[in-house]
Image (cartoon, rainbow, N blue to C red; front, side, top):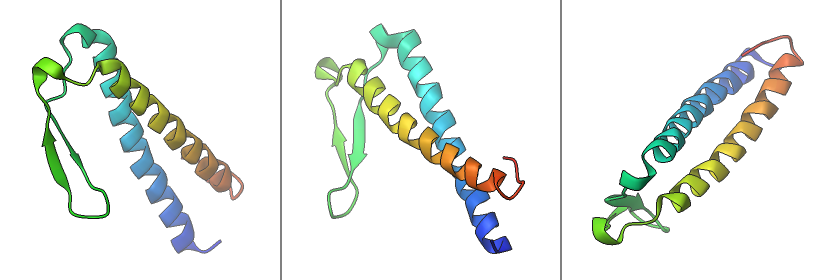
Length: 95
């Protein structure tokens, strides 16, 4: 494996790690503050520019759905991190 490939894998691993940490923090916050947690807006895209949707705090998205979505995404991120880690360990590089 070329150095550039290793560097790209390590960079990707670190990027995923930052995302995972952010998602974990949000899950902890939702668990701790569930009765007071509300979503006020979200940004999305669907084959176009990023748009913002304002969400009425009196009819907010229940936190259980946000937590479930973050948990599912986190699971995929952790699997991808594990795969990268295995590939790097095969060439004696630990992350």
